[in-house]
Length: 477
Image (cartoon, rainbow, N blue to C red; front, side, top):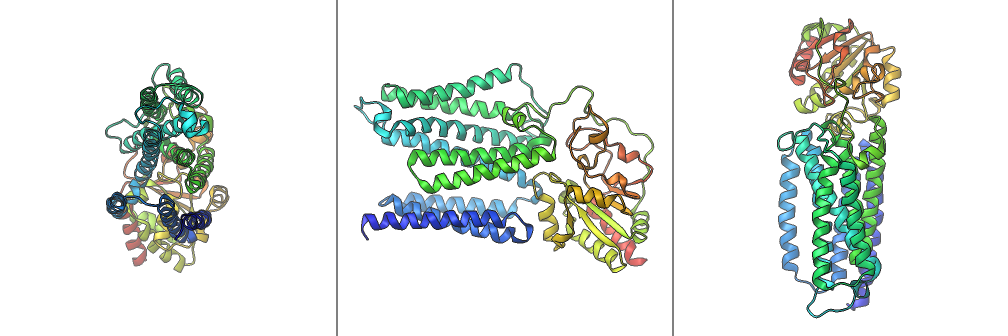
């Protein structure tokens, strides 16, 4: 096959891949079609890789095959062994790898296309001014994504880096310099004339500064807000990929990167609105810190507690039950027990619905995926506004491991760390059953006064054990 025919074939693969990416994203907008959408996007990526190999022509496939084998093994093991509760950490690592790959491609392109002995012409004259500038941008965005994602991972783990905000004096000025210097280097790449060795040195300077900037942007953000940061870093990884596409003149990489960047930014906007955060604060860092005294668990007064038997009695008499899942449900992997309990209640004539907060759990859609695993009808899942409307007439609100997303402090305490955040108004139900291991604070680190409300009964148990106990009692009634 001629060279021209191969290039045409590669472009056809790219076109089909782009269409599959768009269809995959559309499928992921609903739980019912998310699995299919993910598969469609995966096929699109496979075709994009094949198209890239065709376009590359004669290359040493030993490295390609070796990379595919190693990457496939790591990805397969990671997907199979990582629990759903650690999915945010896994997403953060994937974002970081994407950013790191962009850095490596940009630097290697500089070395391959320009840094040869004896060159005297400008970098822009060899690879073009726009490509020279884009090399610096690709390194900058990719480096920020890589180091920022690693910090996000460790903050979610709460081991190497503490989850609380780390506020460095003068951080905004430092961040501005760390951002502007690489941009100036990019302009220098595009219009300046330097020795080849100096171009290489400046490229590595941009690598170091971008890595530091990534750390500086994420360190000031509290662990409770890491899901927002991860979605933003996901957008950054797409932008880095798109920039790399311009560097190596690959149309498919530009399209895929733009799709990831745009979808990540839209998701970030949705999450910031759900958490009452400012997008500008997310971008420039430093949110998640609260005034002294605004956070902290606080002391509780008298709290009414009970066991599975009392909870089963309330549920047995209820006509409408609203289940509010949270991170505790994910940790206990209790979604199937929830389904079993709901079946028993519905057999008694009760209406069982599920109130889903946009940021319940530790990532968007976390609760939707868990409930879908238990084959719970998607039509029974309520969004925030519908949930609050139903709760006004509900007999029982059953909260399973949620805390901050049902905390009335968001509406009642202007000094609270979650002030203004839209929450599920569980306290409006006639009775509230809250399954929680202890009175400990949620991710925001603040007291939840609903624990003390007269219509609230606490079940201090693991979510799965509590639900199993309730199911056992219901079966005996």
